[in-house]
Image (cartoon, rainbow, N blue to C red; front, top):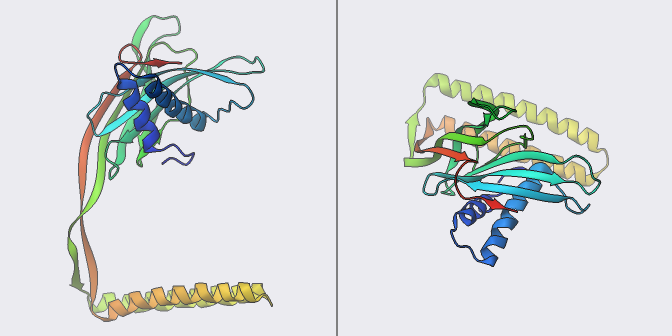
Length: 256
């Protein structure tokens, strides 16, 4: 989920709904709801003031490790200000266990006067997390648009149970020094917190609880070092490559 609350479910609902060749009224309404949720949360659009939104949406091709939509938006304000035109891209993984990595670009394939030219990149970004949504891209003066995204949908898997690995005398000495350093810092922080709390018993108790938790954590790590071993986890990264292209010149589109 993105910081502004756009979820995998919203993106998948929009993309899947757009690909239905003969949607029912209920299906179209659900797709529209998902698209409007993406638009409103991405571009801080509110219809409470009477603003109106027109959009045309294009889905990716189904079946890949990544799925999503490109949405061309025109916002009409109730105050009669100039229309605002922008484009959004929302991508997510088709497997909830995966996260996105790679790059994406939104490009215009025409000059202002409409003369064909090589694609001009209007927006590019790195992909990360389980959901990516671009910032609104000003496309009020752009021609046809094309989205290109590529990378991997990845996840980390445990290849074997954790194992004990012997540590050296130098590592043990280093662990002891680190424990002493952290404990000293925790005591200093606790003393400051108590002084700041004054006669407030609740704040004093909170400070003590925090100190006790830190002390226990540090001691546990030190004891493990004294035992003469450290635990090593064994992981591997699973990659599912993807390449996505969306063009305003082709494909299904939902116009609202």
